[in-house]
Image 1 (cartoon, rainbow, N blue to C red):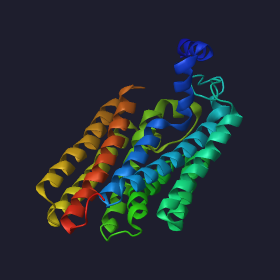
Image 2: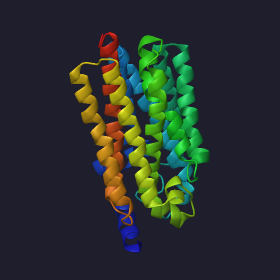
Image 3: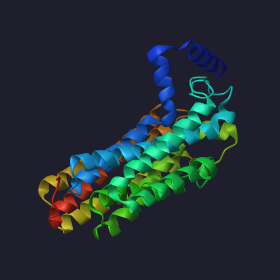
Length: 305
């Protein structure tokens, strides 16, 4: 551990140009933030929104997530100092003042773009920020860290669909609880990634409370429930075969990631855990889009503009 930290510190101190920029860009947690924006944009297109509206909604969600990710690093900065020199703030790539500015600008930009969906969507954007900040300031490092994910993940398809149409169809009565299941699965998978670090720091998490094996199996079960609901509703409502196949393929990704996560969870500090979580996150986003596309096609809602 000591030699790795020393190497990271040396790398951080000597980083310049593109490397320094990429290190600073980690402040906004680009992978999940961009993924959330893409999911919202694709859902908006499936709902019948025009490409400019879908782009605005996707950028809005991405900026809101940038703000949440930045606050996460601001909150962690005192604890990370001297321990995680590769992170933007403790590594000296971004000052605390600059990080606060990024958080405020991204939050303001995300809410401004939400105006494309009307005042109610702006209110939903405020709710997204509130849920994210609740995770950053309160739930993170506790056994309830999964709760903001369970509440927040369902807001992604709601944000995209409502932003594009100004209304929500009845199918969301099934989609939202299923998305909460998926959000819980992603939260537990995310907690599995950091089990040893959380334990060393004296933090708590749902993965530590359950143990690696039970946590891994629970993730698989939760993703399985979502897959069954998606397939079942699409078939019962008579979705075209192509969309049913799309759901099958999309559902396979988070399940495969969950199986990889189960194996990696039982190997101390396995680097495969983060990959498993990323596969689950991407697969869940694709499944949401495929599921909405299937139900839209089955009900006759037009796809695209």
